[in-house]
Image 1 (cartoon, rainbow, N blue to C red):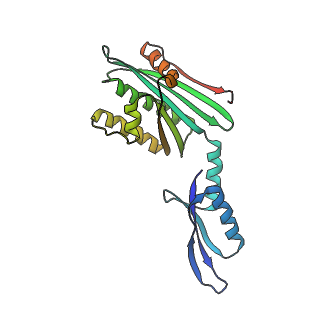
Image 2: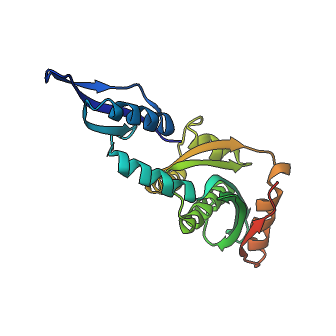
Length: 221
């Protein structure tokens, strides 16, 4: 839920006016407050400010939040990369879970790539592959849970580990640029290999020449 600040100019019966600013609060609370302020008949130029400094009228924010509720939510991407040192080939796999309204959906995708340097690069490429697929489902301005069993990728992207390799820096820039374009707020979580079997299997299948791209609706859990 978006947090906003309410700003309005208050005018007394004698014509004295002053700008007023609320604390930051969730969108729904801000709307209730705005309606109460409007009922006084003494507010002028009421608007909202989000945490990016964007200015919204009441109608603009209501329209935006209605559309946002219709967009995919509770997005989770799980990725894995597999690398063959002899052939320099990599298999990348990603699984995406999300809700569209009340419907829970899953996307599975994999791809074989040539000329990568090592397994860590394959892991970065797998996450990149998944993010490219997310572009197709009209996701914007929401949180995304990113899960993988690579401590290097997860900790470097989370800012926990330093990045010294230019190769990894380039992949990080691509990933962070995509997240910024989609206005996605990432939450990174390291998982065990046992928890990552689905995307690991996709990566291995890609490495062995079997490419997969599927999207299905799941039974609600």
